[in-house]
Structures are given as C-alpha cells and as structure tokens.
Length: 197
Length: 261
Image: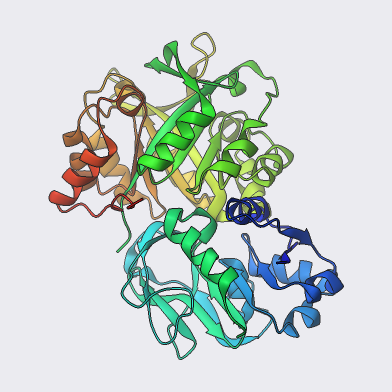
C-alpha cells in the first residue's frame, strides 16, 4: 500500500511517519502532486498556524490537487482544520473539502491550548472508531470545529466540539493519533484498512 | 473530560539519564531509550527530556537520541535544554519532538519566545521556570543556569512577573520547577502553584518535590495544575504508575487509565 504524507513543512511530519512505520508501512513524505494523487492513502499533517500552512500549500500549488483527491485522506490536527472551508486563525480560506468552520475555542475559562488526553466518542457513521469505545486521545489546539452533520466523533473541553469530521473520502482528526498510544495506533490501522469511501 | 497528566522527567547528560538532588550530585539512572519505552508502556501520559548540561556549558550537544525516541514511543514528549535559536528548535522538532522547552535562553533573550511561537506555533513552546523561595525577601525568584552548580544564579525576575511575561509572549505551557522542593520528595509547593495557577491561563505543570502518591493527589486537588512532573519516584520505583493512577481515580482526579495490552 502506498501511503503519502503531504509535506506541509510542519514539525510533526516525522512523528506521523514513525507511527505508520510502527504499523509496518513506509510512508513517503512528499509535496509532489502526481505522487500524492497516485497514493492509496494520503495524510495531511499539520501543527502551527492555518494561515502559514495554507500559504505553504498555495506556494507548492497543492490546493487544487488536494481538493481533487478521491482516495481516503486523513487530516491530523491542523491538517483537519485545513480541510474545512475557513479558519478564524489568521482569517484564512482553507481547502473547503468539508463545509465546516474552524473557530477559536471558548473553553469557558479553562486554560488554552486544550492540551493533553481527553476522551472522544463516535457519532454518526464513524468508520475508524467503534460506537461503544471512548478512548483517551492526545490533543493540542486552541482552534476547533463545532459539532455539525459532518462530525463523526465528539469531545468536550468547556464546550463540545468535533474530535473527528468526515465528508466522502476526507476524514479529519483534531487529536494526534500518532501520539495517542494504543488508541491512536488502532485508529491509524483502521484508516489503512478502510474500504473504498 | 481532559485528564490530568503524569509526566516522568528524564534528566539527560551526555546521552544518559541521570538524577540529582536539588540540581546537584548527579547519579546515573540508565540509557534513554529503554527508560522512555518503559515509561510509555506503564502509562505515562507524556515525557520530558531535560538536557541539564546544555545551557550551562554553552556547547551544542548530540541530540540524535531524540529521533530514536520519536521512532519508538507513541506518547508525546518534550525536549528541554540549550535551545537558543529557531534553528535549534527546528532540528529537534523535525527529529520528532512534540514540544520544546526553554528556560535560561528565554531569560537571556525573551524575544526568543515570540520568535518560536511565530515560527512553530504556541502548542509546541513550553517555558521552564526554576523558581526559588528566598526566605530573606519572602519572594519567589527565578534562577538560571541551574544545570551547573557553579553557574547557577538568580535572575532579575520574580516568578509571578516572569509567568505573566511569558504568557503575554505567547508561550503554550509552563513547567514550574520549585527548586526548594527538588529531589527531596517532601511534596509539591502547593501554595506557590495555587497562586500562579490563578494568574496563568495556559497549561501549568508542577515540578519538584513528589515523594508519595498523596503529593500528586494534593497538587491536583489543591493547586489544580494540569500535570505533575516527577523523576526519582519513578526512576527508583518508589511509586508505581498503576497504583498512582488508581489512587488518583479513587480520589476523583481524572487521569487516563492504563491501557489494556
């Protein structure tokens, strides 16, 4: 199986790559649109700011190629937020493959960033997480997507928000499966084993 | 609900894990990789690797072990010690560190905090603060170069002002090392942590003084910190991670339960 990690020039590329290597696949880190289009699975990682990441994708002329992907694509953390239509962080238009909005968390006076292990639970049809499971996953973020019809897992930190979103072949996870222990490992494994979306 | 984090800290010197008492008299604990692996397996929520020599003797040390740790463990980890520039930070983050923690270099050049936040994002910039209670002045004071006894000295900052400053500069998390408590296992400095917690709207991690399970319960219930860091109680098997987490849960402190194999 050809797994490609989109080179967004973000810091967690290496940890995402290692997480797949622990599952026995060797992902390629690339910004080559043809290689990305030809992959069986595409990972869109990201930490940092939405504005900077979108600038990188535009400079690399990857916006349209990413929007046109039809194989399963997994966006992680900022990578998930890049899948939405717009992010309040830097007031930037994103890829828009999932019609959701990324906004600053309110968190009811709790410390931000929302940093650490929190439980998620599946809603709607989640292809990566069993309905009965509520695993702890590792989060680090200050911006989030509100729950809507594209939410496939929820989390709560002062307010409910989408822990995972999905539309067609695009799946986003707000947490870091590559740093979420056995729960994250299981989720990445499910992603590799997905049927056609 | 967000879980409180238990964070073993591995002091690294020349590629090996060591442990000192009150930042002095370091003894060898073991190799980095087996310890990191073991802590991840027994249920640590996060690890901190603290290169205790790097800042105080001014050299660039071999950090290739960072990539080996990232390759093996599937929980987040922070690297601290001697990070003075964006380039240093970039190297460590690209090797797979999730966060970088800066201490003395931030005191020498506070703008470094803004530069790192702008470049890599708030989420990966941790500020370590070595805070010492000066009985004469009755104030908590920030110390620097604490990795080397001969160079360790007081900075111009009082702890509460420095906390305010680093938060304003965009830091993503603070690890507060209560120096008077370090390595003596008499409990965390609850009073100081509780005061700073009220002034700090980013995650706050307690460090220094853990000696028993009760100390962890107290620091979470009384100071409401987001995480508790400890070294010797874990290195010397004084506290078992499983027992600690069971006791915390029994005392209504939300922690991530141990994963079933």
